[in-house]
Amino acid sequence: MMVKICGITNRDDARAAVESGASALGFNFYAKSKRCVTPDLAAELMAELPSTVLKVGVFVNEAPVELAEQLGLDVLQVHGTPAIWPRQNLWRALSVTSLFRAGDLDNVEADAFLLDAPSGAQYGGTGETFDWALIRGLPRRIIVAGGLDADNVSRAIAVAQPWGVDACSRIESAPGKKDHRKMAAFITAALRAS
Image (cartoon, rainbow, N blue to C red; front, side, top):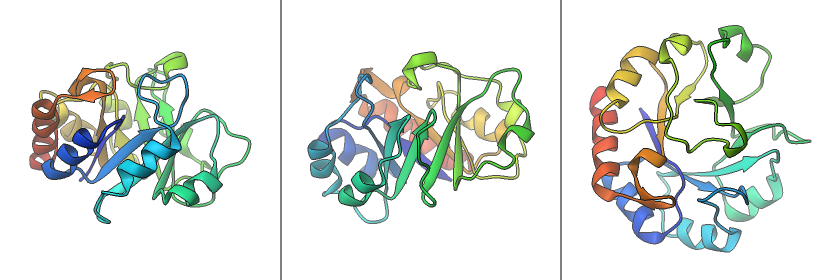
């Protein structure tokens, strides 16, 4: 099970996530996000990560391959519609509403799909969940996001049967500051459920 902690903004949270067993850390470059980091800060934080932990750059309406290469990002997680899509290491982020159908992913190129609750202009991080049964059994790499924490991640995994899970706002003490106890409990619960 791939377990991602998104919205990393500081060294203590990055270290705690890695020590708790996270397989990927998300660094948000969307300027309007409460969890936005600069490329310089992201580079500083990522320099201390072990090579086994995926470094995921989170972007909205852009997919800056040059910045990704400069920072050594392993994955671009893209929300919205950039002018140019990268050809590899791409996670497409999509909102799941009651109108979602498996066919919505047909003919869409991506290495994985991060499926989240609708969040409007916030592009995630709202702490809201969606009906996980809508994505059960999809024949693609699926990452469930949106409102996950230690209390519900086991159920999300049982219902959706995803490749990975992603948590952010429900494991924070404030936007951009992780609650290390909640984060560790989430990671433990996700790994046990898988």
